[in-house]
Amino acid sequence: MKKKNVIRLTQAAMIAAIYVVLTYFISAFGLASGAIQVRISEALTILPVFTPAAIPGLFVGCLLSNLLTGCMALDVIFGSIATLIGAVGTYLLRKTKFAFTLPPVISNAIIVPIVLKNVYGLQDAAWYLVLTVGAGEVISVCILGMILKKVLWKYRNVIFKEED
Image 1 (cartoon, rainbow, N blue to C red):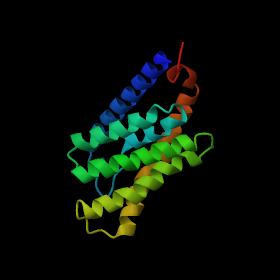
Image 2: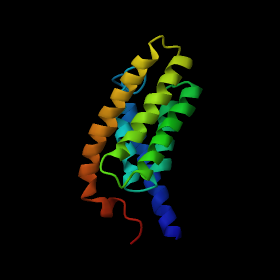
Image 3: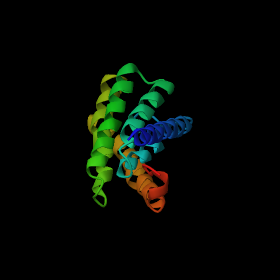
C-alpha cells in the first residue's frame, strides 16, 4: 500500500511539473492568460482518465503556474479551482469516449471569465470572454488532449503503472 502512495505522489508531482513548464512556455507567447488564451498545459486535464494522481497534480501545477506567471491572488485561487473541478469531472467521466473532455472546458469557460471581469476589470462582454476562454479550452483539451490520450493509451500500463 505504501508503494502505491509513493507512485501516485510521484505521478502527481511529475504532472504538476509538466503543467508548470508548458504554461510557462506558452506564457512567452502571451497565451497563458487573458481574454484570449490557449493554455496548452490544459491538455493534461485528460490525464485523470489514466490515474487519479493527475487530479492533485493538475491542481498544484495550475496553482504554481498562476503564481509564477504573475496572476493576481483571486485568479491563482479560482483559476486553480476551475482546473481542479475539470480534473475531477474528467476522472468521473473517464469511461466515456469523449464526454471526459467537457468538464475542464465548461469549468474554465464559466469561472475564468468571471475572474477576468472581476479581478482584472476586463471590459469585454461576458459572452465574449466565455466564447474566447471556451474556444481556447476546446483547442487545448478536446483537440490536443485527445491527441495526447491517443498517444498515451498504448503505453498506459507502463506510464501509469501502480505497482510492480
